[in-house]
Length: 255
Image (cartoon, rainbow, N blue to C red; front, top):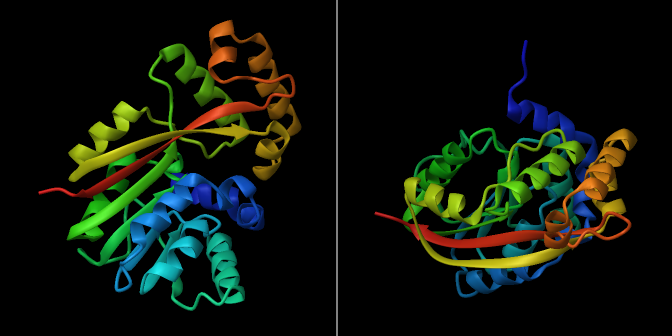
């Protein structure tokens, strides 16, 4: 029987949960500071961390709100989040298994939805966004954060290729324009977009997903043979390290 994308992603990340809890790229960043700033003064809020991964959004949000529900398709990720929350004394974090495209929550169940660095794994981006809107209260707000693709086809193709070689569960990075359009179609009003550049250290980037040696070599071959415009855009270094663009979309529930 063929596995769904959600099942494939869950099995793919099952042995990697602890790597994401300890990942510096995932546990730090100005985008996390932006989330904390957005949540200050919302001490009664119930928050969904959608596609929680290693739980870093949950840990950052928990001190500011009443409750955080960390949701993910990977059981070992949820186990790691629950254990880490307990270690840190964050008793208001609970975990729930579920796929973005079919969330196990009633409508209007959350005051805030937060989603960071996971949408590129979703089988159906807009189905997930519609579900996020469904479980968000009418006056609710959401923050979606993900690595984004360049608008130019040449650059986009390069990024999708190396991402897929690095991680077989990768589906697609979307451009900022695609994000804005999809959010609007899914019932959100975009209030702000912040674009940041994050430096990806090649050895750490591939080790975190346990990229097979032959795939890492293929990525390096693509980088070395890429057009000058590609190497310049991504600032590809001799060791394969490169720049990745990450966008933060602050939205509210639309009418």
